Length: 317
Image (cartoon, rainbow, N blue to C red; front, side):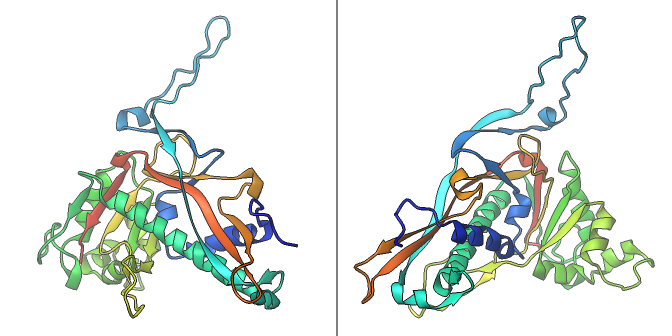
């Protein structure tokens, strides 16, 4: 039976949300800015300064046994999520080709659209994080100083990373390193010397790097994309999304608590509390047998919760 334009495709919606987890493999945006489910597209959230983050409310009950109100020390800010998505026309003759319960074309294009939405969010988070005023150090030149680039065993990544950690009022629990940068750090003599003889493999790993700097997680960013206009020959020129920059932040996926960044995403009850929503509707005038359009969308926005919990070392190579 044809689907009404308002109808939410439940099975395809589940597919989109399940696949989005796989789509984010190698991407780090949703790790840097964890997603917090919201019930509506407009509302408020809290930002925090250093002073606000450390504020503790007195918990002593009064003589009559009445507790004091717990107030959030942060500054309330308003948000309005942005609806993002893509659609594509599929011919009805594709319905004959199925993979399990899904029309093959539906599945293929749902995954392509989810990939596109996820990479666009990766770029937005990158731009916000790396563009924070006063929250970065930019390396330059060759030599062994902490301000020099790390290529060819140069600079002093140990001191540069220590400075980045000290620039945050909570010790960062996340360090993000693009794959190309990690290739350089993997055998950097200064880091190997700091790790000492206990590092029998003689190379830096995510685990040993995290241990060296007492950071909970070191994540390698692998995402590449071409965000430019499509060329006439349809060729692409992909680049590393996070460039030659190393990011440090304190993350927390809970609502209204201090952290670097968060993504606010609307979870629609009509879509079983999911972030992604898939709809299908008929377009009978298209093609010999007619067709239908399939749309994948979500309601999401990215916010800096505390800029003082975000720091980057830029242009390290």
